[in-house]
Length: 111
Image 1 (cartoon, rainbow, N blue to C red):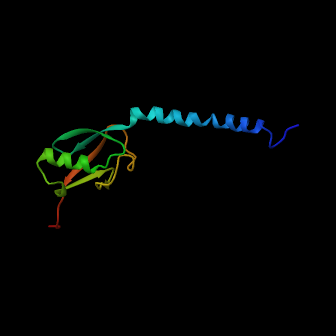
Image 2: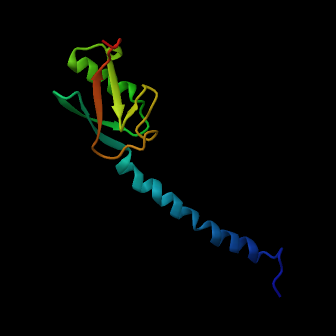
Image 3: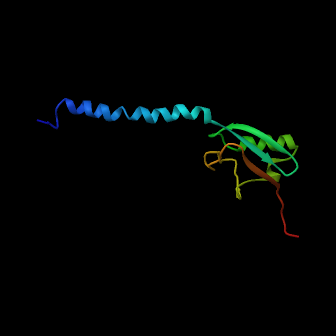
């Protein structure tokens, strides 16, 4: 008696679609995690920033350089051994709450 094209199949599809709102529940959980706290340290000082996970780190880098009175191009920003560019976001780097970015003075030459 089961007919593949019967009106009861859309109901079955609707039941299957009711599982999709569960995937909508996940974004409801994320708003509390849309921002992340990141510590930026140059060895002598630490500054904490709270930024959106989707924000380019360029803003954070410029803010740190301004607070230190340095040119952002004279600094090297590193997270877990990887140099950060201004186009990276916390999501790109899989950053977690309270992760630390290390800052080094850019050096040219080898002597």
